[in-house]
Length: 169
Image 1: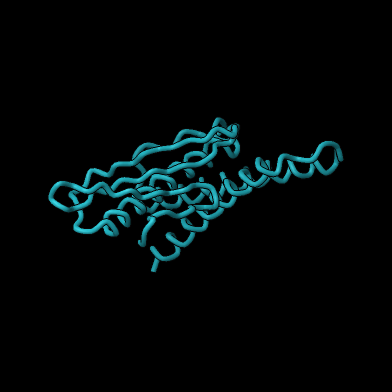
Image 2 (image 1 turned 90 degrees about the horizontal axis):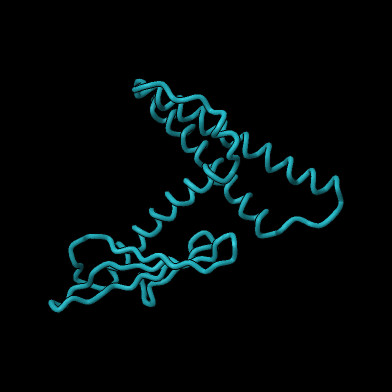
């Protein structure tokens, strides 16, 4: 990664890697993740991976960037599960205790597909209702965020499908 060690992730987050120098001349991985949340408030989150110092600032920045992207992916996945269609999660039956690995993979695939389909139906219903009413236009930012969450759910389902297909070979 080259200086200034910044990137934009998913057109939503600014990832600023800021390696801290040590007295020995090495660098510690540090990163600042900034974004504007759904309410319009600016948020900053500082990540400090607990790793040994790196010989160069670029290496420390690469590690910090990777840690930030993993953190963002986990955050976005949790947000998509929680925010896409909350009533679907409430209706979902509890998972059986300790299924076999094959069964767990199939269940994960079915759950990912169910989440995606429910979110897709809810998203489509929202758009159709807005078009049918012909009133005030939808909030473009909210619609884009919902579409992005739907996209992430679809990608999670595709990943599960590919995992199952590759696993059987």
